[in-house]
Length: 287
Image (cartoon, rainbow, N blue to C red; front, side, top):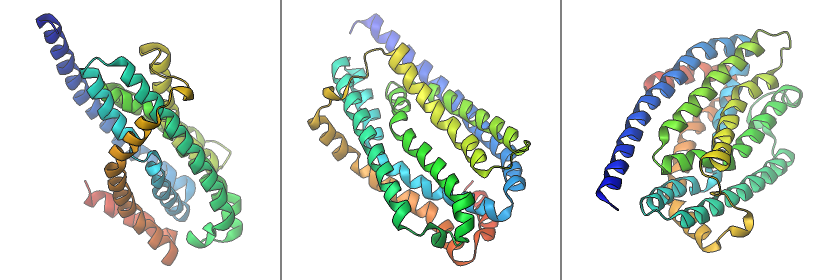
């Protein structure tokens, strides 16, 4: 690498670091502002008990973050290393292997979710009337689960951006998703159709759409040819990715279990109405 190209690469890294910091504050600020406005709207729309159920559903669905087996974290590290070495072909192999593996994981989770809906008494776990569960809560869980599963392979775009030290683009997509979610919440809560399922769609779909747009933008415009068909998968690279991401996966399991266990215990023992006050106290404590 020549002296001029080294200086150019250095300037690019500093620019990306500055943009990532600034956009990170923007994304975080947008998320906080959206929460401030959306939480009162959601509580008023759903009521205290249903809002507690919604918080529990959100925490349980967070377990699906384990669906990538740590592959996303591995891909970020690998892309960063390959980018530094200017190894485009290796990056293509890694991206293709991880993307199609995540797609397979998503399909497997979808199948497990269908089986679980048949054999697990979710109305008993959520401590609600079975009729209410099937009429109101069941469709909400279906929508949230489906979007979370679809989002597993689509999130690969964010990982690629982070690997190329372009995290500021991720922050902008996430800020867009937050604003879009708030707009959807306002439309649903002020509309005539009092649909909990429609509210869940408005709250969760923007983040999946944003990650999908990021992945599509990379594949179609920014880095054409980076994604390849499933025949380009390398089993050796898949094994390497799973092995490398296993520690991150285990850490994710621990964190998600710690964050979601309280909601499940509370809703199952003393009811959904008590989750809201606990959640507010917990959020203040963890600031």
